[in-house]
Image 1 (cartoon, rainbow, N blue to C red):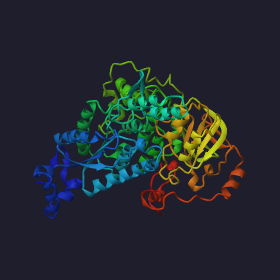
Image 2 (spheres, rainbow, N blue to C red):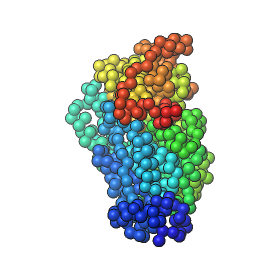
Image 3 (cartoon, one colour):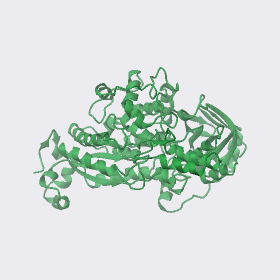
Image 4 (cartoon, rainbow, N blue to C red):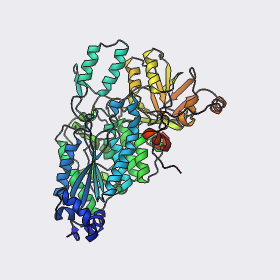
Length: 568
């Protein structure tokens, strides 16, 4: 009863055959029978449905319900689906607190959890459902690592909020805190913004990290075309859930695996979409990590090269005016990709989870009849001539740093450093009025190892913007939320904790940020930098036991994607 073929799938070659076929595996089958499986269920391919689900915030509270529709699609196409959970750390709730140190750590934990559960139970294919900043790359990392037929399904974004006639997102709440602290708005106005900003379940509505990674999953070819942009509340989510369940069975039949899809050219496509949309700087970290798991050599130089030739063609928050729901109404990520393909800016011949190429998908995609030039422009008439993210190098960042130029119009900034050894210290300094126009706020010891966990600095950057400090820049070895805007440079490598030059910046030093020349320089002599580094000594680690201590001992620099590597 466990042999033969099913729709072209050689059942005897599937991993589940070795675990559940034959006399010696009777105890394994007994456990499946105890959960209601029949002989027919056991005889079908076994499909894992990993679900990043949690009630701790709106991003993933609904994903468990989507898994039921995925399972419908799997069963209708001849598979036997079983769900298991992946963890969630909610970035917005952790922002500005110790909780944010667990955010990036959770990405690698999610990948490990999915790998462990998939491999331990001998699944044949994987549908991964996720709906927030780290659950998405963690799921994609697991797929690349396991390399069994896989497809990604996004949970969708929240609908934008409305405040006094304009659309707002969670970004506006963070900035409103800064405005309140400076006396620019009342407490009543702050509360009104708070109550209006995130009216439904789903991820943040702008092109912050969650929607950026959903777009990248499509661009990589790991998600169904058009699946990134519909809101979480849309009935399209149910459609894409069912279709993802059906699609995994087609992938199993034709034998397409993640590493057949996630080739170098697919990562170039993903970077091109990132640049064209002005997505989150976090995508740089995550693409480097996913590529590592896929066995693809991706470097910061690839981002720089593609940024130079792919213009910014989408007006999406925080750098633009519109939300992901607005993009969905005019054609979603396929519209962006079609614009890029028509100009030869992405590769059309790479495979996707449909079993077809990018070009074939776009040729058959049904675009809505809607005006879109206010949201998406042709590459010949872009919002900016280069991509939305720029990589900087220089004496302050020998291994690179990242700036989101889509969210600022300042291409060159030179100012005096105001140095803080941590995010909390910086926030208090801004409260005390220590930061003035023309300063460069330096926040260090918040990198992958020093944080540890490379926390996001949205509370600080939003406080700067909300306080009306338009001529203030920031440089950090930590990272930023996708909602951050302004001349903010993150991912400085090497970080302070390992003796990078950012560790020896002093108050009053002048720092140069030059987007056009791709420079981030500490304007003192190299001899002085070397002298200071010679006298520098490491700070004691923040944690000496538990998860964060383990992570700090294994994590690499941001320039490598902050991946965790075994000690050698």
